[in-house]
Image (cartoon, rainbow, N blue to C red; front, side, top):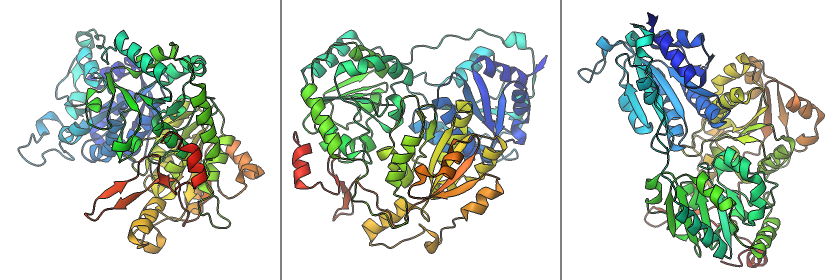
Length: 587
């Protein structure tokens, strides 16, 4: 006879789990003790960091898997943000939560019976692929099926609530060792006729563009890299697929988005055929004015979720439900004909519209965030893992400016776009990276929301380089209040009541070396020594609190109180007439 939690821990190892991020609690005491003998268990300070770390760990796809373990009640409620983010990004996140003993469950009869008890299943159900209360011992096959994600195509979080007395039950392991079944195919099969139809549309197009989304795996693009140049078709990537292709590839033309690269938006809008692979074409991708998305062309949308294909926006010429990787492999092996004139036009537009635009205001002595991102991308290597946080000006600047290298791994979470994701994500990515340098770029406002995890960074001796945009608060909120409300600032900086720490003593308290950097940092010997040293280092990037952030898609408040946005190619500020005439040839 064995304790059931020992059996569960063994099954988790069999299923590929090597790491557990957790906050200890009484209602997970058996499972935590059992897992501590069989895998790497990493304590974090707050449960939300555990969930974010697991999401980013798994997203690096190293062949190892992690899960999060939280206790009942506040353990579950604290990790809800991380579960929501992974749900929106269709990413794998297994959360095993403790629960009170089965006899102590309230079952809706009273608000609470057991200590710390709350109905975690009801809370988690809308943000998970499945949420299960395991109130009795189950066999190996049933357990494996319970925690398996992505069975309906898109991945997503799984929440398993495990009562304390079930964890501690004595069981006969041999009687529970049922055979694990092979999971069914995750995606609908894409027929050869559909691929042939896509190839024919691309071949006949005058101005085709292929947009790669996160549904296209890194392994697929790595395997096809030698075929991309022969395709002769411009390639673009979504933010979540940023690391699928290097920025120096001759057919790479950036990252279109509402906060995207201006030249990318302009080129995509002039396509006569856009093949969107493995991206759900959200409003952030198409612009809120989705009626003018690719206004003179056809959109072919390939996604594993049929609901995304039928949601009504944008307008589609062809919708294909299935695996985007399968379609990309078919297209990459086809002869798409010559599009040399279109490619040369794309290169001309790219050259005419630099990523660091002179329109932005940067006060004397401050470092332009765009110049910072440009220089940082030059200093990083192909072996680095880059975490460009997930919200605010630091995030959008990195997405607009950072030039990725093939081999880098870059992870963010833009669906929920929550502040505070950076540190937890960098911790998870750092463990998955196995000692490779991890580079985190985060705004001071977002960093404050999970700064307690500096303790985890120090305790785990992570090789993490933290770049903190020190601009006195919430830059994006400050800009919104300036643009729409005449500069009536509310709760966005120290002057309006936002509590921001003194950064040097804060990092010193965690024994993490910190230095301020400004213009010319990329050639500062002290900076370079710290950036290339092994271990945790922090850098305070001196950003003007009144820094402007252009280009962007502007919106107007209408007379009815609603918002009206420009289409993607009409970013603010407007281009001068001569440049517009050159780059808007097909609009």
